[in-house]
Length: 298
Length: 281
Image (cartoon, rainbow over all chains, first blue to last red; front, side, top):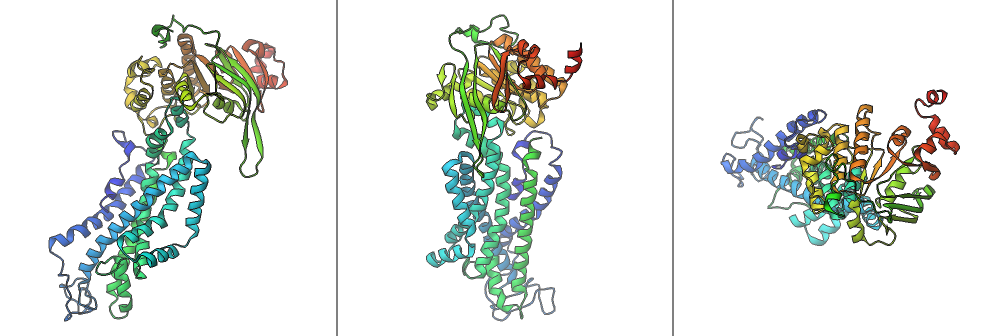
């Protein structure tokens, strides 16, 4: 995730001394985003270095174990699959797509989610009622049902996958943003601005949104993890990324029937998904604590 | 009204109070009723119950009462910032039930509010300077009369504080910034909703002295919302005592404090620190 290293920067902190309460959260934010940044940069840079084994099939070397097991060679550090394709090379190229899906998938959910949440939380009334019903309806639908319906109708492709991610992710963002907005709009500075003659759009875009930035960034981070998990689950069912494209989820799917003979095909992408999502979620939690309004006010 | 008369910075225009306009009161609250409905139970709670009051130009009026007596609801309704139920409110002669949105927005800067929580009254993401800049873009003509540094000087703050963010200000400093922001608009009415309750005792006295000075120099009327009777006595001409949404006693400050007629007012006065000692004397 190339964006993550910037996420820990606090917009209010520009030119101000560090705040005491945020300090611990900030260091953990740094140590969590570091491996994420290394992985995401690595996945994009490694194929350019020419260090990876060739990507083609090699029917003379099928199901070769990783180099550290008996029978493995350093020509294929993580072994090969049933067509003799190098697992490490696949792993890296699949990682690219997984990370792109995670980031874009989070953006398409966060964008409309934040907007609707702010509208509902700020204007209340019928706007809030309509949006709240939509949120509840969305949350009541099992995501796999939504995904199946859309994919059965439109076929599986990246745009459809993003549509599914947007539909399954916006509701949570909208709900959190809505309640955060409701808290901010009762703060006295909002009344003060109104007394100074500020228009409602100005208050929403210049004051409510910037004050939501911390929450939104944290939510976005958590959403990256969710998007990766959803994509993996869909790809595992054959509904997400389809060949010739590869993601960690689709690698997992193609490796599952080989588990007894060549466990390494499915193991490494599975491990990667687990660690990536774990790190992203921990980072999201750290950011949420970091941007706790009770701390920010001090 | 000439420019020189409107210029009302403490110290500078001290001897030139704003020309009084006796015919239009700054604020008239006429038989106001405000009700809150509990969404869950549907129960109606009457926060303000048939309240009337009037503030003339330059006058200083207090509303006192315990927490939950409807003081703040009254203030918010009177400044068109909160819900207004039955009855009518006239700001500078304009009835709020008849005024158009555009006219109301133009009228708003005439009434400025200083809230209880000084930190909550400032956007945490804005430095003092950028906050003032925003007020200037909102009301370019109204605010051009004074520079940022001079304005802070008028509330006795150093110009270095301009680049601070709200969380880097002490409570007293933040409240002074809030007062400065209100002053920048040259309002004809300042509503102070418990302006000293969130502050240390030593700072309270400073802020009150500042409010008193502003009153004397700008000629702005003051609506003071407080539960602190000592504060009210030192600052206001007229006092209204509120209890459970109703005004139970009104009158000139000294009269209400020396010869209270209502039982609740007497209780309130007896609860004042030092009241027993004073009565025995």
